[in-house]
Length: 76
Length: 383
Ligand code: SF4
Image 1: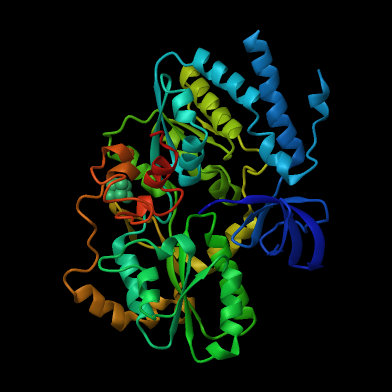
Image 2 (image 1 turned 45 degrees about the vertical axis):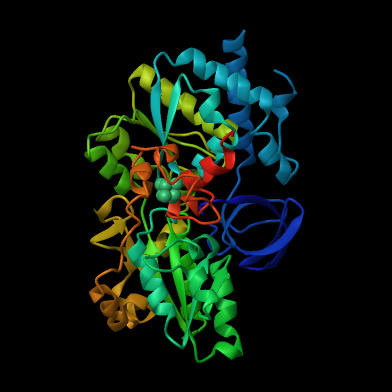
């Protein structure tokens, strides 16, 4: 139920609607719940037709790298 | 360091695949295994986590160290029979179109389910999004109908219902009503911890609820109950990161709320969504949960000023009749969903599991939704 799917913004329709690409399929989603306007190229988390939040790519990278470093040290 | 430092996401696919790479997962499992001294009991609250744990076999990879208890975080599973009976009763009116999310359609009420009612000719429609409700409402063929949205979900989904109401009001649409079944995550956690008789050492807190609410809603878990609380995403790497942080909190004796899903969860959550929810909803004195009974302050309803949109108000006479009928609101006595949702039983403890109760023919709600513990066990158990 609380599933939310990361999708890439590929077109801005109007101030509260964008088209996203979700692993190859395109759909309209509402951005009225987003705190900042979406721009093309953003990754959004989509739930029941609405964007919930932008995905922070820097944090995504950090969380992967952080554990990789720690694990490398521990696993040695 | 190596090239990973310059990591960036190039496609939606990578957001998934990078968090389920086998070598990362086994290294993380290795670290957890070496850091956990004695078995810890972790309740994952969200049904999405339950599903991922079963799908990727995380419960077997770590079986000597981590015992996963499945919690009350599947909104379909916790919906009491009474509320489904109410939806069926409302759908019985000639001029009503009852709209519900797919999973909800198959959950058994006392005598029927929404999907069975549809087969009998009632106008029951499955929707994927509250936005579908607008389309149904604006369709000329439906202008004399009342479209009743059976609104369910936790803090993740409530903002979308609020967004629908906002749109209904701003566009002057006058044929949409709401049967509100939105529930809150913290009250059942407190109910479980207050009951005292549980084994839980820490919680994996729901990722997408937290995207909306922020991390503050879990403060009671460490502050009042002294247990670990880590918010995690849904890929195996995310869940194991959460498990590792819980293990470290326990080892170091410093229970706190931590976020292991920072790419999506901000400390304050989505404040715009929170404001919209506050504008339209208020907390009920109590709400019934399957297996728990009534939990104080655990559900939402529309604020009084929006009661003309509230199906419970508009259909109050019909619902009163339903309440007076003696057999309404009964759950199947053999179903152990209630115990499973409290983390006291597992699906295989239920005598009906995989026999009288299966996804084709669910006896209880935990077998309906793919997030339900029984459905996840059924799908991924190894025969
Ligand atoms: S297997 Fe079916 S009857 Fe048993 S607890 Fe699960 S949903 Fe209920």
